[in-house]
Image (cartoon, rainbow, N blue to C red; front, side, top):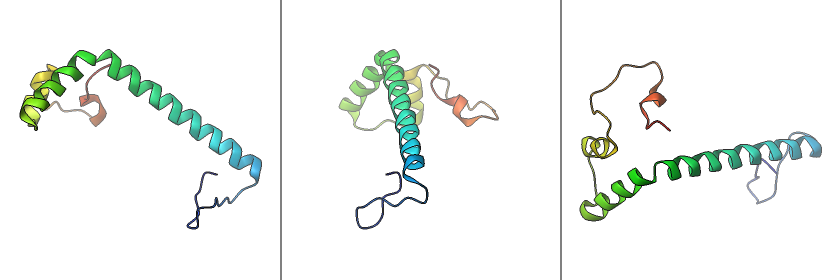
Length: 89
């Protein structure tokens, strides 16, 4: 179930039906996140390939180079939402 116990069994602090519902909801959330991540990677495939090729040649990238490859300004932008600094979908 949703809370693994130390001995490899499941520990639940609720009835079996509630535990099933929690597990189903967690599975749905994980499935949605996986599909979202896969979609983003597919949409940004050209940038992913560009970064991968540069990493094959250099093994490491500094932040400025990484952002330049993605076409993002390395000048910090003030924002209330740190996630907004990520690559847009």
